[in-house]
Length: 480
Image 1 (tube, rainbow, N blue to C red):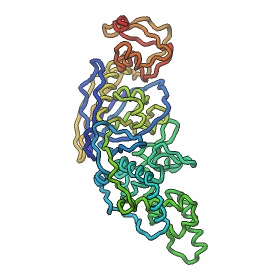
Image 2 (image 1 turned 90 degrees about the horizontal axis):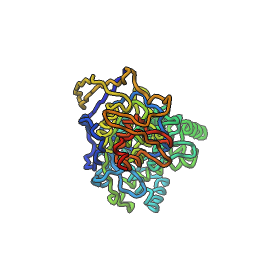
Image 3 (image 1 turned 135 degrees about the horizontal axis):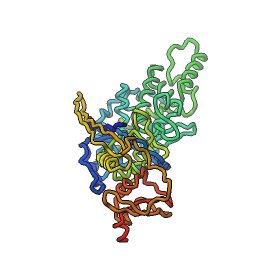
Image 4 (image 1 turned 45 degrees about the horizontal axis):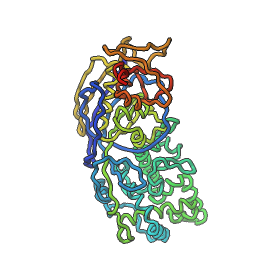
């Protein structure tokens, strides 16, 4: 007998939002009152959908972290921006995270011609920089806390401008992936999961935390930010080799800088630091270089984060959350094959538009309670504890079916399915799925709720196959 824990955590709200919350999906009369939750975090993505054959006990926790992310109404970025969000200027958004034009800690004012040449490059190609700043403001609520946690300069927020353009799907010729461009070996060294189901290099939250740890380690190794940045681009071994080569050709040299070894590095790394410093110079004093950053408007957006402990197809997540599948894919780019794959006790993160986490939990509870996967026992306990920075509410729910065994998937049929069933006093008749049928089309044609169809038929995904038998209310079919 396994347990389901539901935990809600009220945490720090970074930015206030008046985001539009989509109306709740009707789940017949199966909605529970549910718990009252607070807000949470964000992201983006897309990929192939894979049907899920089995769902073991839907054992899950809900944890809502309150992050309000800055999104940009900037053509071509493609970030999720809820209706009703109010725009803020670039510096208004950045100041919320302690970033101001004169807070930069990196030595960007060095009189190096290479920096000046890249300043001129961006003056001639302003679109690149505008796009980068827009994306930086969007990701600030994810990246800046990660940098702060490691005690790093906050202006490192802008490093992905030259790494990936903040594109979570970016992939280099050397197979570096995500906004921070981790190769697989380094990603795994810093705790990111990369396998056929999930690639956390594409998760902006987890990859930002890993990147901050990596940058801190590089700075501690080289004792110099320019060498650390070069090592982030080229790797530690390349920088150490360049230092040794320089010392070999300059006997007696004790202190070696990036500018000393620059010509010993590949072209990309020769350009890496001056390019980054040029961007920071322009951002700090945009008007001097002919830029108007106030022309970019950021839109604060918020996301709910749900922690699940068993496999769930993203189409089922979308249905239970009352949003379209593409939105769920955009918010969860780390799932490569359309299925959430938890990892042991840590569970798996699913991000939803703000306000939809409560609907997701209620619909999932209703589905479980009505026997869709397992029936809920009446043994529900509640306890409350207050910590220094958050309030947690825990409710344990036992899952079992009538045999006392945790249910997985519906038992395999041993004979032809019956033509009709009576469930709860209601007569259901068999409907054979045809080519082109989808759960949405069937529900619309017969004026049925999709969750109700899933619950009655014990479906674990919205994907249907021709020849599959569904049971639908007889009175609905007779009216068509």
